[in-house]
Length: 208
Length: 307
Image (cartoon, rainbow over all chains, first blue to last red; front, side, top):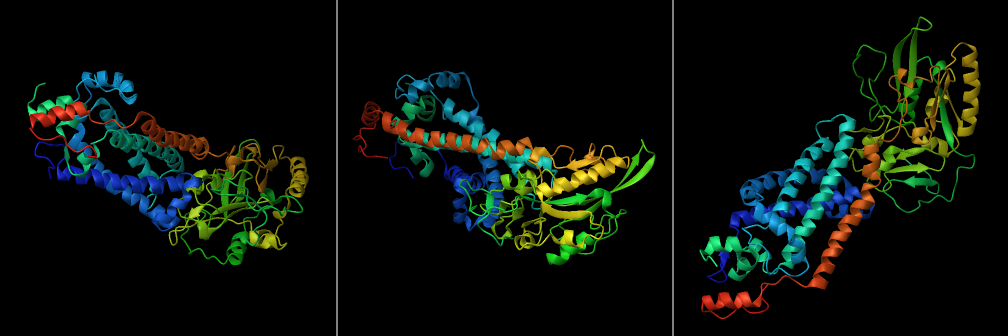
């Protein structure tokens, strides 16, 4: 749905659905995982029907997320290859965070920060999925030293990904006019020109 | 399973003190297993199953006397048989060790457990699992340096020796102690058991076992199940009893420093984001750019309150 005929399509319905399946899985995994990570969060197990259910549900949600994250990563990885313009953008990112984004280098569909986030999450998934399988032990019991290492790595990868997602969610809230891209797929031309000038030019043929 | 509730020294996944008004009047307890007196009769295994009302399915003979071949959720103690060719004396020694929970003063299982109150340590030193609080995650298995807890395939709860906490609570000795026909297993205060071990060790040394000694490993803060070993310099001879057991550093980091650091990092990220928004304001599309776009489209600018 375009609210305005001049709006630019940013995500297809299928891309949005894929993103939100991963997002819902991530929230469920973060809540259930934190419940088992620190006693302060243990009451979160009540959201999942108690401790044993939290333990049972968590890995299955993890499998769903692994599949849909892979699908999403395959869709988007080409757009996230980091180039010189991204490095230039990242060097100036501090200025933008400080509230001044007037002369940021022109960015394609994703800026350098978004690309770093993408690869950060890919690395996180590369660690968290195999270590999760090791500590699951529903059908297979690996050597205990491996389970110990996997438990620590799983927790570290989880914290790493939660931190990235906090930044991801906040960046979407902070940059007004962004969340609609993931809700109904379009952004305004002004938004595109301000935040992703190279993408704006590509989409509109407007070379200014 | 607990009968008491006022004498809990430590409780899993709990950051405030547990009810501990009642202290063990005679101090900490201990079970002393004198390996040199053990004849491998397995009466202790039988007594354990009988008192705790557990029955291990009859297994198959795997070529050694160990039966069952390993600890299980129903077999909380197992006699481990090791043949040792002592090159110094030229003797073939049959080393028999009653395996089971060591009731560490610094219990790795309790440290690893994420479920509040699923594992407790009483003021008398006994480490007990409360299966009704167990969520079946198996973290206790990673915490244990002695490979003791077993997760039942039937109910996915963790089980291990309770040191007969129910019997001890009412002034009885553990069932294995009561039944041991040679007096190889004794029970009393930790201090008393140390004294008794000393006599036994002196006796063993007199009889040529000059490396005899007490196994009360300091790496886990000492244990409330101790062994008198004829070869205390090589505990691993006794079916792989760890020479220097300690909680794995991986588990110590995971269950120690990682927790507060992770909480701090996540808190800073979340609260920092909020305060960034409050101090910097949102990153809006510039009004100038919106007007420019609107002029191009020959349409009025979008309303100001657009999300």
